Each structure stands twice: as structure tokens, then as C-alpha cells.
Length: 117
Image (tube, rainbow, N blue to C red; front, side):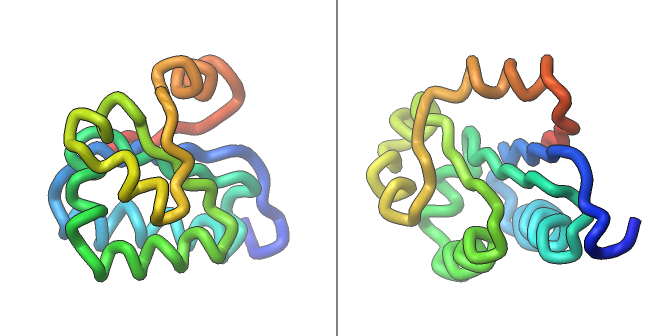
């Protein structure tokens, strides 16, 4: 697929609390998927330990801004974020913080490709 031929919808479910996984796979692929137009619609969901990692890592927050500026929709699971006490911090980073069980089920049942990391 070449640039300009973006098709389909991608959801990246980021659950890992490992910084290297975040930087070298999750953020790198998600950004390139949008910038290089591999996918038309790219969503990143922050769920579980990744929520705590993100609010405590300024470099990842800077990388997150690049994702958002590129047009990646970024959301976080409210139940998980609440359990780590980071919901307000994630919202201040521009993430849509909401309960994700039902929306994630929709992604799985609809025409989305899902990567879980």
C-alpha cells in the first residue's frame, strides 16, 4: 500500500507497562500507520499498566503529542485509569478517558483490525 491509499480502521490496544515496548513498537507503528497513510482511521487505547507509565514519562508524553497531531485518536480506559489514580492526568494530556469495555467490544465486532500489546 502506498501513501494516499489509506484504507480501513486500526485500533492499537496498549496494555504493557514496558517503556521500550511503548516507544519501539506501540508509538512507532501507530504514528507511522497514520503519517504514512497505511490506515485511514487509527485509534490508540491506553489500558492497564500503560496508563501509569504514560503519566510518569515525559518523553512518552512528547511522543503522544506527535500521535495526536498526526490525527491518531487516543483514548484511555477509565476503570483502569481510576484504579491507578491517573484519570485526570490522562485527560489533561488530551486523552478521552471513558469506560472502554463496550467500545472495545464494538471494535472487535465491527470492521476494525485490532492489535493488542
